[in-house]
Amino acid sequence: MSKTFSGEIELSFACRGDRVIADRTYRRGNSRISANVPAAGGIPCYFLISTGGGFIEGEHYRQSIHLGMDAHAIVTTQTPNYIYKCEHGLTTRQECSVSMEKGSFLEYYIDETIPYKDAVYEQRTDIQLQEDARLILTDGLTSGWAPDGSAFSYGRIGQRIRVRRGDRLLYNDYLLIDPSRQPAAQLGFFEGFACFHSAVIIDACLDAAFVDAVRDRLARLRTSARFGVSLLEEEGVVLRILGPDADQTRTVLDAFIRFYREEVCKLAPVDLRKRNGIKL
Image (cartoon, rainbow, N blue to C red):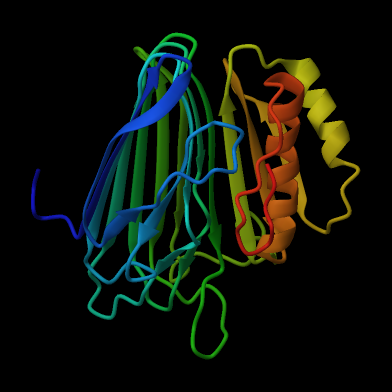
């Protein structure tokens, strides 16, 4: 493996009889992997950890996740993804590749990115699914942090996600924002809100009836966040949320995921024990 990365992770899961185990947990540099978290009813659950608490200017990180046939795993970040200031204009980068064999199921909960003043960041996530593999993937971006409390004082942020099943592109999402050139707080961008969250579920059984049912469930929430749920062209649904803070957007996000896990997958709730008591 190349030594040009500031941190690397390789995480692989495989079925062993009636159990799923992590058969490879490699890490190097500033990246760490937690021990298995016994909170998911027998589903292996691991946290990805940055030892510095965030990414420094010019650093480059790499992650690789693999699920063997019929394996089911939960992978999540330990905290929001803090991108520290890039005073010299150097780009901080993270790339992640995911490969999933037939019948596998990955729940990949990426916390929101919080860029500091002048941060420049590129994130690339590429996911390849085989037949009947299912995916839950979350991501997000906030208005950032600055010493004077101003919003959107960061530089260019790009977050790209591509999901393929074989040769078919199921999902292609590229969130690109540059507050120095765009009115990031205004209509068409964050529209006066501070936090954005997104979730995509890839599952061929999801249809318009599921969208109607989950919309009905989310409409009962007490929140000032705005959100929308829609079908992909094939094999999945996507949720977008804008809210005044991360707790409110997560409330919608968690309810959306919990509905799918309980009503479609028949799975018990999972408590990830993060700072706002997330239960999926």
